[in-house]
Every structure is written in C-alpha cells, then in structure tokens.
Length: 434
Ligand SMILES: [Mn+2]
Image 1 (tube, helix red, strand yellow):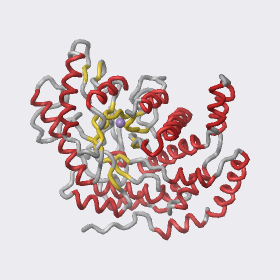
Image 2 (cartoon, rainbow, N blue to C red; image 1 turned 120 degrees about the vertical axis):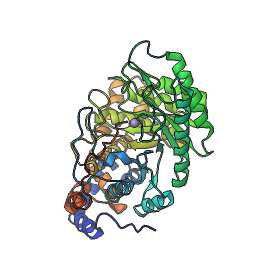
Image 3 (cartoon, rainbow, N blue to C red; image 1 turned 30 degrees about the horizontal axis):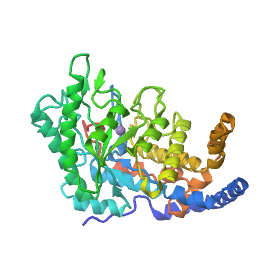
Image 4 (tube, rainbow, N blue to C red; image 1 turned 90 degrees about the vertical axis):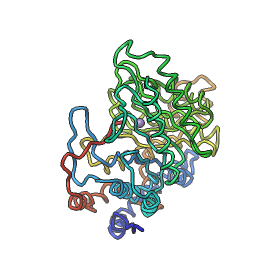
C-alpha cells in the first residue's frame, strides 16, 4: 500500500499563514462591517464559498502546447502518480479542488484500488472520467482519422464504444460517477460527410454507451464549434448537444466548455436555458480571447464568468440541493507553472461564485420586474465591484489551506524539488488540448 505524505510541509504552511493571519483578520472584519450595512451575513457567505469545489483535469498539471510547439517545463509529472501529487499540492493549499478528472488511456494504471488510496491520502477523490477517441494510441487496431463514434465503418464505431465502456469500468473502481464524452468527429470540407447521417451514427453509438452506464452515473456530452474539424463538427453546439442528451435519456446532460462557442456567444444565457431544461451537466472552465484558447479561468473576461455564476446561483435558489453541476477546469498551461495556473484559476472561480452570492437578489428581481435596467445592472455591478479576497482567504484558512497559496507554494520550492526528482524525458508526449 502506498503511503501518501503531504506534498507541502505543514510546518511551512503554518509559518506562512502565521505571517498573514493578523492582516486577514482585520480585512475580514472590515468587510464584515461593510456587508452588514447591506444586510449580508459574512460568515454565511464564507461557509458557502468554503463548500465550493472544482475538479482538476489530470492533464492540466502537465505543460500544454499549441499547434506549433510544446515547450516542456521543469519537474513535469511523468505518470498518474506524479499528477496526483501535483493535484495534492493544489488541494492542500487552496482547499478548492477536492477531485481529479482522469483521462483514459493517458492515466491508465496497473492497480486502480491503489490509485484511489493514493488520491485519498492527498484528500482527493475522482470526478468524471474522460474518454479519448480523438487520437490513435499505440497498438490501436483501427484509426480515428475520419471519426470515432460517428465513423462510417461500424467496426471503428464499435472500437470507440468499447473504449468508452472501459472508461466506465475504470471509473467504477475509482468511485467516479460520470463519463465525459467529447468527440473530435467532423468534416473539414463541405460534402465530406453527410451532416444528418453522421449525427445519426453518433446517436446510435452514444446509445450503446448510455446503456452501459451504472444507475448512479451521468453521461456528459461536450459540444465544440470547431477544431480539429474546421468545417462541421458532429456535436457542434449546445442545441445539438441538447438534442443528443434528450434522445439518450435522463442520465445524459450537456457540458458547457467556455471556449467551445462562437465568439460573442451569450454563454450565461445558454447556462440559463440548460438549467431550465434540467440538462446542465456542468462546466469545463477556462477563458479565451479568440477561440478555444484554453487560457486560465477569469484571465480575460471575469465579468462573463461572474454572470455565469450569477445564473448558477439563480439555479441553486430555484432547484435547491438537487442542483449540483459538475465543475472542472479545462485549460492548457503553455507559459506558466501549471500548478500556479490551476491554483489561480480555482481562486478566480471561487471569486466569481462569492461575488454572485453577494448579489442583492431582492433588488435585482424587483428591478427586473419594474423594468428598471439601471438598478438591475447596478445590483450586479455592486456585487462584482466588491473585493471578496478576505472571504476566499478566510475560507481557505478555516479549512487548513494557505492564506496566500501562491506565495506559500513558491516558498515551498516544490517545483524545484520536483525538477530534481523527476528526470526530464526525451520526447515526452504533450498534453492534449480538449
Ligand atoms: Mn473541455
């Protein structure tokens, strides 16, 4: 059995927090006073923020790349055990990332019971499993060059279905309860494939996967507007995703990756529609300027992120505890230390959530009902303009995390130690961008 030790020395964490505790207490008390004047009970917000969790994608702790090149970073994880340790750092310091989302076959392991124990030692459990039918693996019999679940050849479709069933089986051993299916299937040229028949073949394959889901599992369908297919992807938008999820049944839901839409799409409205339909699976969080840029969450358009969380808070108010979308970060870290990017992104997501909780719902709804656009906008902006840093830091402190995760991480020299312990591998393969 594996022994898991905390990746960051608890004594160092304690020293780092001690140097910041007094300032945080003062800031937290000051914010509490200001919010009390608005009728907001600060501790109630802090409790909700502390309960927020987002999954780390296992591939996110490796350095990403672009279509042009990948520049490896120091101390990159060599295998799934190294990845779990890096995820353990993020969870130990932020207390915001209690789950990891694995990618098969990249994260295959000889013993999944052992993997589950190692993860538990870091305080981690497993979120949705991700299948991979967008590239060919070594020893793979049939190629996915022209598609997988929607391929014209039934033998290729059967191979892709079997892979998804294997992902479910591995996930069962890990305690996961969801399968995310993203396919790269599509056409690069008009006429290359039959738009309707390709979708019907996809549905036929997806039904076979759906039929194999355990009772307590969900199937997440992830749409993407373009790339790698540049003319027509088979699951191109949330409408197609919704049709597929509806055809499949109650356990099929629509996943929203923030980078998988046309520019200027009103994503928060899609979120509202999917909540209304009872079909919102959850999110792949990231940010973008142009396309599927996979930049760090909240780095480009934090107001959009806040508006998405505003809809999520509305959904939770309307549906109660039954409303539990799955949150994951799906980013490519090309020029940063992936651990630092993921900690920062988790922080930005938690910030957007905290701000959304601070929206004066009564004022917002009455402004909406009174057709008062100025006051409605102000209700949102008042929350968005609130500095919620003390709430986030206090939520981390109360759970044993770091008041300043980034400073504590750098003080720990974890990356330098990893670089010494993990020899760089010649020709190591890059992380995929999904
Ligand atoms: Mn994604």
